[in-house]
Length: 153
Image 1 (spheres, rainbow, N blue to C red):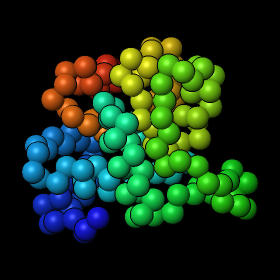
Image 2 (image 1 turned 135 degrees about the vertical axis):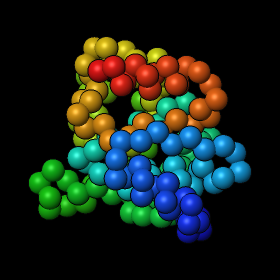
Image 3 (image 1 turned 90 degrees about the vertical axis):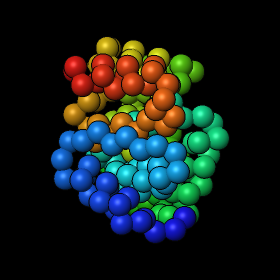
Image 4 (image 1 turned 45 degrees about the horizontal axis):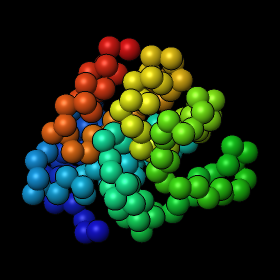
């Protein structure tokens, strides 16, 4: 993955400095901006939700994120490095308890819109930890509805 273009760097700076909504169309390098945003926030103290991503999207992002950085987090004790997937897939196959436990560890989560809505309504996801919602293929209205729902909480 190449470095960011000046306008992409400016987009990332602006959304890092203040709450913002960034909409980008095809051909502007949206994947690159999404990758750098996720890389900036892939920490145990923040939570980034990746919505509307296909399995291929998640594989692509994981591959690129591993290439761009270390795929480890420092353990809670701070002494050792614990390897885990950069993007954790969250779906209805995970129990509510497992999802809550995963969310509390922070990092990047590919979540289905249905599960995210339920987790927001049932207060499973710690909203105070959410530092970003990245919507892949934002032309689909379901994902946008979930974002609007999040702003109401």
